[in-house]
Amino acid sequence: EPDDTALTSGLNDLHFDNGRHTAGFDGESFWGHAVYLGTGRMARHEVIDLSYYERSPRFRADNGFEPENNQRKIQFYAGYNLYPMGQIVHSLRPYLRAGRVWNFDKLIKEDYLSLEMDAHLTAQTNIHPAIFVNRENFRGVQFDNIWLFHLCGHSNFSRPLGISSAVNYGHQIARRESPPVLGKEFSFYLGGYIKPSKRLLIEPSFNYTRSNHIDTDNLLYETYTLRTHMRYQFNRELSFRLITQYNDFYRNWEIDPLITYQLNPFTLLYAGSTHDLHDYDDYDNTGLKQTSRQFFFKIQYLIQM
Image 1: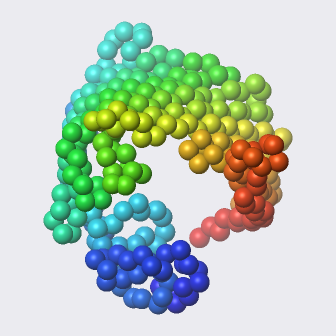
Image 2: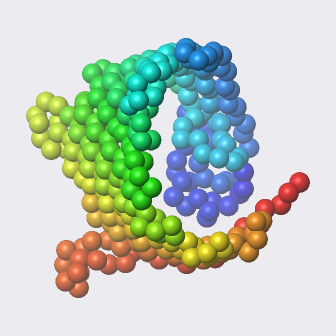
Image 3: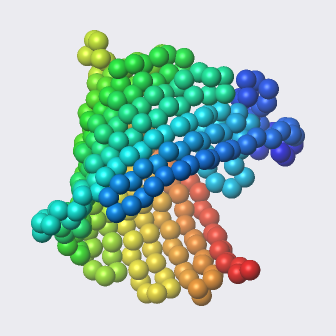
């Protein structure tokens, strides 16, 4: 790795692999590995899969994103496809998923089981109900009574309008608490797209989450997020994208405009900026103050080998 800790000023005090290595760029040399093994069968009706994943404590991905290392995982999946002859229901797939996650110290991190179903209906409509049951060791605390009921769906029933929604309720870990505790959590999502014209696409969404302590019923957290993604295609070469988001938990606004120009099929030009604002109640009577801003310009060229 590089030997320049200034590039990793916020990571230099972090360690991994049981304290053997630092997360900062201080010139260390080490190696890690990742393993995937799988076998399965996919036919018109039955779908079966057995998979094994492994990431060593020193594993790092050179290209791509890996959310966790020091992990071993085995998972079994079994489903069955049904094809009703009706005009409303096109196909159904009930399935079961079960697995175990443990680390290289042989500590069991999670056992999980889920019963789920995918339903494909007419008018490009899909529904997905599911029940999840698991137990997990998180930050050294063992949780054995975790469960979740989930229901989501989306429909592209018309060209100018589509909708998607999800609702969840169960006993979930409040991971931001110190120490973490189990909470009765309810979450709701509503989103979709609006296409007033062939050139304009608007995708609004709303996320809401609330959790109460499982024993005392005290409020642990309640927050929501509003987000809008807007894209306008001026012509084949030029497009404009604007993302706005408000996070109630952090009281932050994000505004990210971007202009894209395609010179040819192999070359793209990007010009944009990112703006972060925090909602202070007593600042300039507006409550908003800009905390960071960045402008950027990017050229992307595809090289064929």
